[in-house]
Length: 85
Image (cartoon, rainbow, N blue to C red; front, side, top):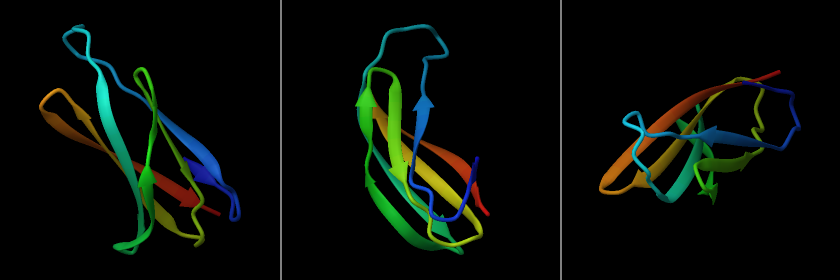
């Protein structure tokens, strides 16, 4: 995704089960990194199968947003590339 410097926006991730079984997202956190340094971190809001992280990248560079979430006995991580202009 693309951000402009100074923006503070919600990044939403919709998760689904590949086998079609019902599930519950138990918890989720986010971590924003640039140049292997953590720029921000926090708890995500969860609305059913939608995970919401509100981020505000500071540097004009490429960041990586890691969203870590728990479903049943599994911990899953999604990485999203965030380009800031």
